[in-house]
Length: 94
Image (cartoon, rainbow, N blue to C red; front, side, top):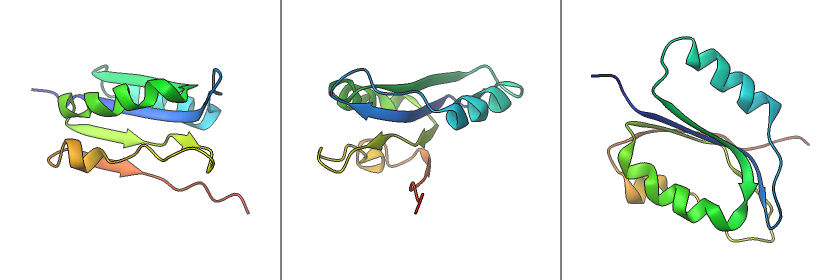
């Protein structure tokens, strides 16, 4: 059985967010090896909690959501699915 993978990236704000070209390239490269991927790249912040709640359905979660510091962070993947493989990042563009 093939692992189910979730990729969440891009910018999440109170409007429509912004897609990340790096996350898109990451998805495209991974798709060369498996098509069992759910890919979500940027969007409205209010949708992020529902996406987080869905992590219980995935074996691997790549959580790269960029949320402005003025909004509460939504990122407790391991609290919802302690058995998933979690890959995360911290944006550091200073």
